[in-house]
Length: 243
Image (cartoon, rainbow, N blue to C red; front, side, top):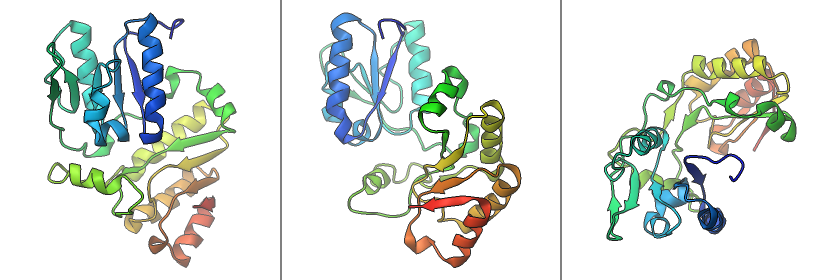
């Protein structure tokens, strides 16, 4: 942080990471008055706890793409940031400003592909053994008791479709572009909660992936969505692991 001198710092945290995020924020603020915004699952589901951290200037609840865009634009111009949807903050008297969430992003294709050219992605790939991580969807239809998914579903009820999928063409184009620009890609990890749920999307995707990408890949599944036909098609397209 000293070397880069950023104008804004973003931190994403799940529950077990929050104490470390707070510690890092405190260390930063002891030396540099750079504003900090925290997002991720824990700030989303426990915003009162997180916004109470004096070293965090803002908390982002839910999807952060448009909220962060609006926050950056307002901060750059010196405009108020206390009316931005998805953003919680503190007013000058120490009170908490709780802005509501904007609708879930749909269709996902309207979002640009991640900007992997912003940093040394070849070095990152090498450190990860050539693992390219991609998400094709958001949301999960299951309500497992150990997962935050059910709480997120309740939070967003009535505010947009919870389960959304990028188009096959959009995902394939991202994969092809990255593989062309970065020859160090050796395999792909699809980080979707469950990629095998929607067969009308998944099977055409596997056909396109086999033809246009062809790299080994691994996925996450739910056993109720898995059968011999699905296993056969996945293996033929290059899947070496389903977990």
